[in-house]
Image (tube, rainbow, N blue to C red; front, side, top):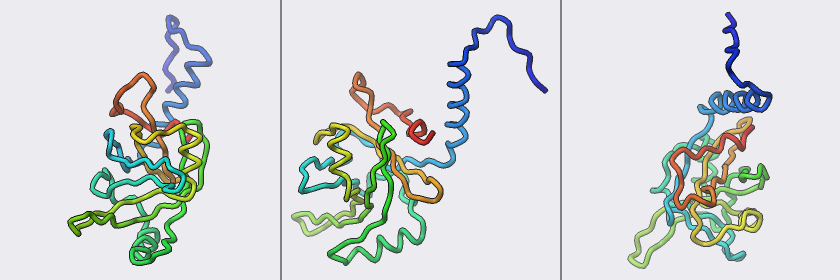
Length: 176
């Protein structure tokens, strides 16, 4: 049953398109997962071309089960491998530019001899840094989603006027 239009409403083509996008975003809610929603220093953004990676400490991940069993197997096989293969993925920035990246896992040894595990996005990270003007202590979030089964990440930065990351940041606009 169709609801009659309110004669007092100011519907326009623009508001219809906005509502359509909102419905799509809500429909996609089940397909996205926050991997890392960072505070200022949670993610180590390496901007030196020789370092070429985004380090994501495992203990900072909101969702730790974002990999498929086959992707997890590749990551585990790489643990003792000097030349890590990693898992291929797509990173999408806020301008909808897509970058090929590799997700790898490293153990970061401390002076005490203990270590912690980090995931790292490599092989293409320098292009992301350059294109988005990222700096060493920038506040970013990385979200994970699947696109046709392919592992994807979305780079989310706060608006320039916002000093901290809003809790409602969503990469869904990047998927439409």
